[in-house]
Length: 286
Ligand SMILES: Cc1cc2nc3c(=O)[nH]c(=O)nc-3n(C[C@H](O)[C@H](O)[C@H](O)COP(=O)(O)OP(=O)(O)OC[C@H]3O[C@@H](n4cnc5c(N)ncnc54)[C@H](O)[C@@H]3O)c2cc1C
Ligand code: FES
Image (cartoon, rainbow, N blue to C red; front, side, top):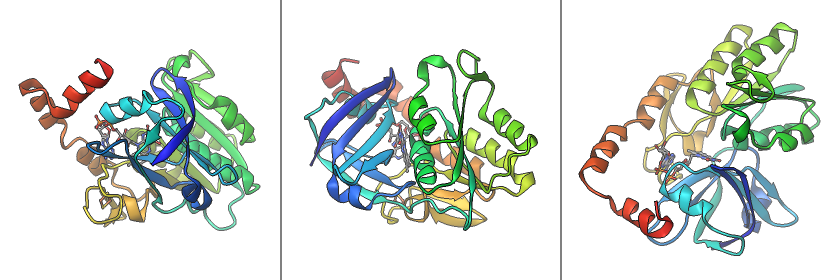
């Protein structure tokens, strides 16, 4: 059981929760995640450790409301508790030896996962450029936090309503063309974004680290749910990742595997009200 000590609504669909979890805070490193369960009948969902404070003994998660569990999580208040909160899981991010200049690229809520990467690189004394991309101005998150841990921070919006207009890949290409010599690029966001960032960096041989988000169940390497193909080999993202070499990942397979239940879910929705949906109606009224 962990207690929520701080709640901040970052935008209408993204919420930050800081929880008391001293044992996880003591061990956590950038790139790792937790699996939580709200209560007894609840499902287990993985969320990245967006920040941690070893002295206060707290861990921060930042999540987007996409379904029942994230909606219920966002409805909790300071002082409320989460029943199970397990971590740190997965391997911490490993940068190439001797890396001096890094570009951290975040897309949408992926910026929550990209932030601890920028923070730890900055704390290690590396030169850090951040490119954070959003659909529009109203969903920009963590701008001040990114600025505090980077040498240059570029905010991009698809519609040009804030920062510069264009995708993160356009900015990354521009910086490379202007002579930026990155030892590594860390890209975290929607799967197509990570795929296209990897395509931009490939011709230059820039090491590109992506954080994968396959469907996870146990988070311990037992169930095989999070299976991904990297460099032609089968990997389990929960124990071998979630970070992998973007030039080696089979992104198309990942996209297909993540969509595997979509048709079934749509069909089920048409046929009956599932137990989880009924629970959502009762608890949150929509
Ligand atoms: C290692 C890892 C780290 C993640 N970190 C973050 C984060 O920091 N912030 C954030 O907003 N999201 C993160 N996610 C995604 C997050 O786990 C899902 O958004 C969440 O599980 C959705 O649950 P739901 O019940 O609200 O939605 P549902 O309606 O159950 O699902 C909506 C969508 O969420 C994804 N999803 C559902 N269950 C799982 C699961 N068990 N494992 C993985 N994906 C699932 C699927 O794509 C699904 O279509 C991460 C995923 C992984 C694998
Ligand atoms: S979530 Fe079960 S093996 Fe990774």
